[in-house]
Length: 289
Image (cartoon, one colour):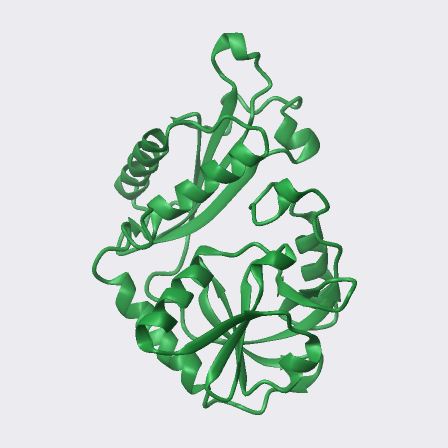
């Protein structure tokens, strides 16, 4: 079974075929945007919402996004080729970056699509530990809320947390505000109310975060975007992370502090069940628009 595959500008890339130019701005300067999603039952979950965010983010970086319909068609074509070659469930990553070729040649934007194998089924509600790591948020407003190729602060924060024996990094600002995990958003519960760091802090408000906010409204669960600090997390009854690939992950311990909720985590479990039910009917159309 194949483990990974790539498409560049709609053409399947072969290891011995042409590669990306070393002069690509995305490679040299990190100028570009990306999005990551996964398939359930062979279909991409929330594809329309992911592609919309990708194109809007690239536009804010002064890029020229290709038509949304083209990206959707190329995603579906790639998945058909992937599945015909024996591929199962896949992690999908789309990247848009300015191409090195001149605009006169009609190739202003480079499109790169990567597929890699992923475990089938709903991601389990597993437990993880985390360490808080101070980071400096992106300085220019065009970087806020966009999934850009400039991901080094997140990767370094994750490496720092793993060096201390933790699974994940919870990034905090120089002023001490909780922001997000290296590749996920953060929620915590105190009593009957959920809290999540406010999007205005410069975090990347993920699509699974948005989905959970919709689920909370539908289920009558009080949730508040707020300015939070590590002390709020240490006092939480339960806490969890959300991402498109891993779904919902419960936090059992932060900076050596074990959360009091233990294995109970009733709200995490309730939202995990609701999230799983949402995936069944129409994964491609979730959060469309």
